[in-house]
Length: 152
Image (tube, one colour):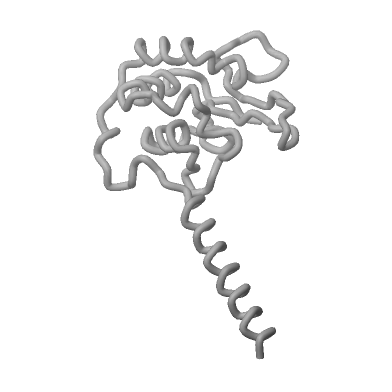
């Protein structure tokens, strides 16, 4: 009888721990689909400054070519979690972020949440970008939209 009580208590404690873990780690986007905060157009010239300040090209420029505005990604970054391949952030609708709304870029940068609602952890939210303003994200997206689409 005592062993079954202990088993039940352990089972309930594990269930409570799992529920707490799930609730604490659930992805929380900064902006929802109905949020109009990011609907305004950004300023590409200001976005170019945000792009330069964040040194986006240092990781996202296509490997093996000199054009810093061809953002095909592919750079291999070693981390304690394994090797991370930097993604394509060009306007290519298949391989890049060309089909993204500004809201999706904001959620990725500010909260580390993908357009499908999954975590980008451990790579995002990157601490240097987590405090960007809404205007910075709008401007950055406006600038990215001026750059060429890069497929595989």
